Length: 316
Image (cartoon, rainbow, N blue to C red):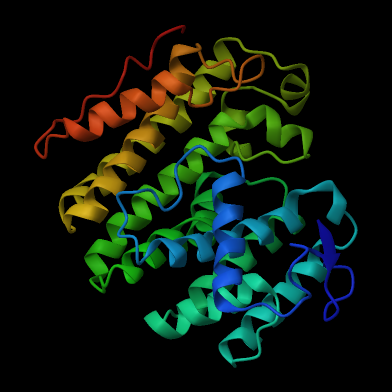
């Protein structure tokens, strides 16, 4: 794989040998699809339930967000994170002006034009990654709620928008699910984020349950930690339930995708509880059998299902 980027110093992109930096739309779309299908994720991106003509657009938006997230996270960008996110914003603006060169933006310019996507939602994602660089602690739960408005909620709105939905009520349901997914990822990755010097557990709650950052460093899982985690997981379940009706309010293709995502996010919460809240010694990732359970629950989905969460007192 060659590395080529003549326009933006320090930002290299993998380029197949048969291309020389001039990206056609089909090649750019293939680049985004490969990125979406090979990068580690808990949930499927642009699955077969999404209409085939929309999948390249979903992959493109994913690739845009994934690359920006890597600028904020990956060690190779240390010392240049904000600079590269700033360049990413510049390239976004140029794509909307018809001046895209990077393959992600060549594909994104086509997606934005075809669907008249509001640029502010894409810019909000960059803003969230910039916040990750600047802020590594959150004083209270409302702080991470505000963070999710930029880091997660735009993704759901973009997916709805691509499918032709413009109803604010649907956007609100999407916001609830996307925020819940973001929080489920936080609680799943407490140990992973600690290694990056990030703590998404609200400082206010850590103080209330008398759990310290020294305890985090030592990976202590005791009654204090379980109560702290249960508090966050209860809040996250509430958001999943707030958004659940969205999964019954859209067309069949998107309905199945949303149900699958909802089942995946809630399964993460279940796995944390099943592991007795120990996210230090075994990351509660979705395994093959979990994904099978997600499919089964999606196919057996009941619109009127009551709010029954797993036994969250387990291990207390």
